[in-house]
Length: 516
Image (cartoon, rainbow, N blue to C red; front, side, top):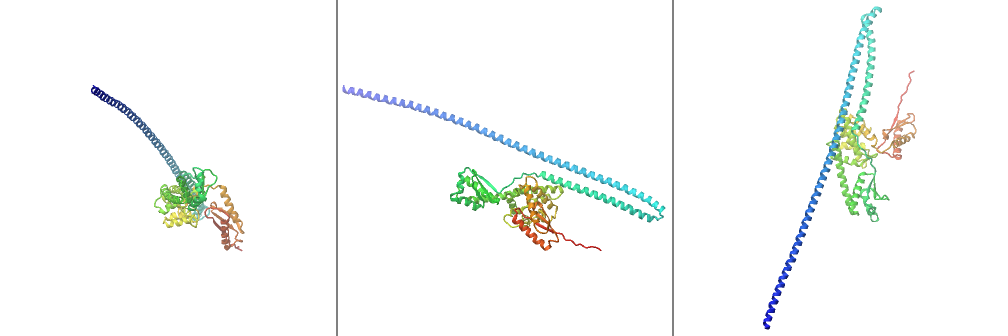
């Protein structure tokens, strides 16, 4: 019985274990099913989020594309509008030029008509003279009893004198009228050239200002015991002024190329943030290369703008250096380009070689590119450079004569001198005021008048030359040379002026005698 009970108990125990196992498996299946369902829901959420994100990206991309297309369309419309404006202005200029041509043609036709009328009047006078000659001949033969040949001779002499007088008066009248027309036409050419070559001018200075992100940067630029600022000043040759000006450093120097190198180097150091002597030396070297490349590009751009080709590459680099050269605040390169355009326009009006005129105008101040580094005036240095690089003789003479130091040998040289004066004299081109010029001229005249034997003094050419009239009885020919040297030395010691001032002393020689 006990065995039977044990067997039954054992069977019941096995059944309970089996039932527990089955129930555990079912619970695992239910938990697994729940886990699978949760994963599927999460995957669906992820897919939905991805789809929404993709659609948002797509909409943003479409909006950006539409904005770019709209911007490109606006830029294109603006460019088309500018081009239309340029074409309209060009058409107006052409119409104005055609009107001027028609007026000139009408004036020429009127002149031809006047000449024809005067010629007809002259013929009528000749006919009247012949009639008068016949009458006088008959009267003379009757009254004086002279022969026909004698009477004819006397009458012809009288009529000839009258005709000569009338002819001389006509010639003088035509000469005066031609001179007036020439002056009027010249003024029209100059005004037209100035209007067609209107350019903005920006005055330059001898300082540059570099903006700083904060005042703390000033201490880093100065460095420990000032080593950074000393290194930068030694490498660039420019003085750095660090004062109370908020978030700014001033670069001071009369050499604009060095000042530009210092400006670029300092801006790079500020952006980089690493400021120490070794880094400063590296950055200054890179900045110098950038400025040299910029100089070359500026020279090539000037040649393309003017339309002059075949200039030696060394002269092209010197033209680029003139971008950093100023005269009375006027940029030398922009001044040369403006002179080239004005010279070309005037040459076209006069029927001359416009390309050669532009070439001479562009190179007329080329000596200013090296006058800081070499002795001599910019005129003489420019002549030497043009000869060295085998420029045409017309260009060399234009460079030599554009300030009046040498006589011009061609009309192009005269045009270049006139264009140079126009570019420098028009309002806004140069920073010096009328009072400055007036004071300089007065100071020149006062220095010359202080010498014994000086009668009159004239400062001409905007103070570039002073002409001194001396009393012949008080100043000899030998003393003139000494006086010119002394006046030039006193001007050099007491005055500040750009370029060179020419001192000319004029002594009149007289020979007097009496007939008794």
